[in-house]
Picture 1 (spheres, rainbow, N blue to C red):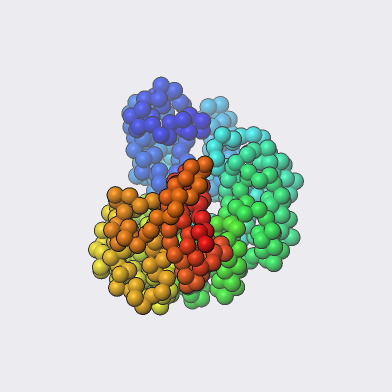
Picture 2: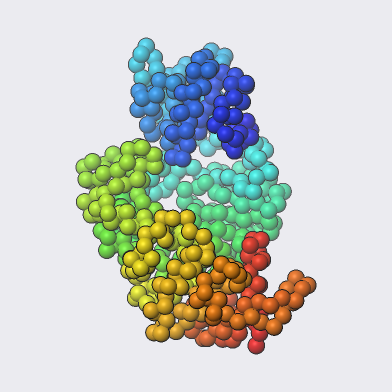
Length: 524
């Protein structure tokens, strides 16, 4: 693992040279959507240079398609499906020490007498899963630390690779031992790998409070099921230090019938209410996910889910295209359901009976616009105001009009921020007269991003005045000034959690470029 970490940023040629220099007897690849193709290519090259090398593939990408990989890629010797801690150790003992029987290795796919054999997967008891953190087997120098307090998932969502993985919670004494290690670290984000952080109200509330009580430099990234957030959990979130938690919530859809179609249980009304409370705290970042292309979800239904979710104004809203992952129940039903999809990673859906290819492609453009205009923070306030005030809350109608007026390059080309602001300036002009606050939101967004310079769109530069010199970091500077009305500050406060009042404000955005908050100065 240390060798791999040291080489991930090197060129493909350098990686091959170093691996050949080490001349390993066994090489294991943990494979995912993003690295499976590169891992296969690297294996094929290495096998020519190191013919005696034994190659093992594992991880979520290889495990579900082990037989197919051995049939297609002669250079792969073994695939391990499921948990690899014990299985990989057993396999190494068998290869290096000639101990044990390959037939006893959980989830092993291998060749024997020119036939491919596949062993059943044996779920490990939690007592046998190595305690990585408490044993110190992690890289404490990295800003992100991966951790788990349970394995498996209580849900059976048919699109998910964990749909058939039984839930097992780690004992609380093991979790506490890990936490004692984490508390000695500083300035770290602890990303929990638990598929769902809801394992009984008492356990969940106890752990959340324990996380909240850790030193200030630790942040905890959790995946939440929104309808299962208890009052006790909500209380912990509201009372903990700002930024102590980061929430990732996979809504996927807000349509009850589509939820049934994917074997997902979720109380939509309760979910929306709980997310609203989390967002309105403006204490901890909230990331929401939707999926396009689920069975039975039409363009209108998908658009409705997008509009309802957007109106919550989360910190980040991701719109993803359904991936038919190998081994998932939905992938196994895909032909019967009329799906067409890319059979190579990342297995994105091309069409289904409810959504044509052209319609899915349009949602991909919506997803890109969300990333560029909203999730980036560049034009978040402007987009929120446009959608709510000019397009009756319809994100798709707003984006359709923007794409028609500005061309698809706004979603496809790598435009610089000033160019994006230029497109939005031209787009909003027809709506200014009937939309109080729209000009203020656009100017506010720009002043969060930059001072006026030679690249500033003319429309913006003409509408910004400069302040009398304001003391910023010990120096007196002239900053751009925005006059905000009650309507203007209402949207800004909703998105930021601040309590600005109508008046004149000067902004210093340079802090933002250093990863620090923009400085805002009230002038009257």
